[in-house]
Length: 131
Ligand code: HEM
Image 1 (cartoon, rainbow, N blue to C red):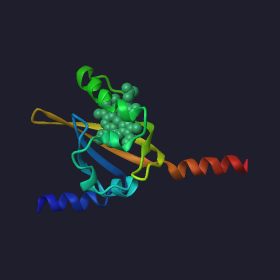
Image 2: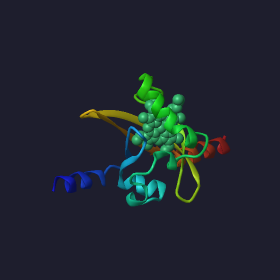
Image 3: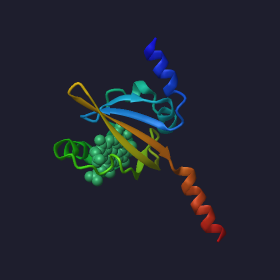
C-alpha cells in the first residue's frame, strides 16, 4: 500500500531520480529515468550506476564514491555538475546532476537528480547560428 503510494508519487516527478547504495548499485530508478536512459527498472536494478555513463567516469565512478566515503570530501554532493550520460542505445547526452546523501541505520544511500540538457544545448547552438 505504502510502497504503491510512493511509486505513484515517483512516477509523477518530471526529473529523473536514481537512488544507489554505497557500492554504487541501483536501488531505485524513477519513471522519468527509465524514459531518459531507455532502460526499464528491472534492467538496472542491482547493477552499478556506472552503466549510465561513458568513459572515463565509467571506469572511475566506484573510486569517486569510495573517495567520498573515506574522506567526506564533496565534489558533487551539494554542488551539482554538468556531466555526460549514456543511454541504452549507446548515445551520449549532457545532463545536470545533483546528488544528496541520506543515512539509514548504519548504511548510506545517495539520491541523484538528473536534468536532461539536450534541448538546452540545441537551443544554445541555434542561438549561435542566428547571431
Ligand atoms: C561523484 C560522474 C551519476 C553518485 C561523481 C563525480 C563525477 C561523477 C565526475 C566526481 C568526481 C570527482 O570530481 O572526483 C557521474 C556521471 C553520472 C553520475 C557522469 C551520469 C549518470 C550519479 C548518480 C549518483 C551518483 C545517479 C547517485 C544516485 C555520486 C557520488 C559521488 C559521485 C555519491 C561522490 C560524492 C561527491 O563527489 O560529492 N560522479 N555521476 N552519480 N557521484 Fe556520480
